[in-house]
Length: 226
Image (cartoon, rainbow, N blue to C red):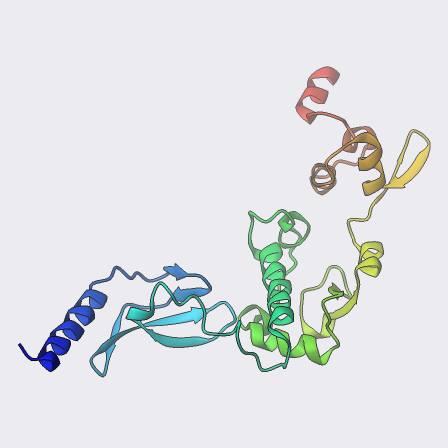
């Protein structure tokens, strides 16, 4: 068998193996999500995918599972160093998570309160990145909503320092307990409480300081008072 024919058979074998790979709609490879079944283009099989950054493109089957993004981590249109671009991507992803992912630790103070992200940003990281850079984002700044009951959108957002954001947080609640008034974080440090537990009690509608700051399971407190 000639070398050229051997190469041809080898190529056809690889193509058939790639065609038979188990790709399914919704399957993920890193940042990529498959949108539809394989499509044959010019004799080769491709997957239509959407990257988390918003880019939709076709990627050849034989590039999986090695390929995990559209390449957005290596290039960007806002002229940020790759490390800062990745940090900004995490800002965007965390914003989406706390508004829409019920498993997120911060969902109860965002998504559960009805806080959403505008379609322009939710569906396209690059649009968010351009706005962020145009409005002075740096890794030392944090995104902040001007109206704390409003959505994440260009008209309602700005960037401030971490210290400023800590002072502005809607969950920076003051509680008067045993004749003293302190914020939640201070009481948690004094009483060795988990801040997440205390904030959840506040969100659940508890208003009595002795309940909010109870050092134990509330079910035990209910039994003791019945």
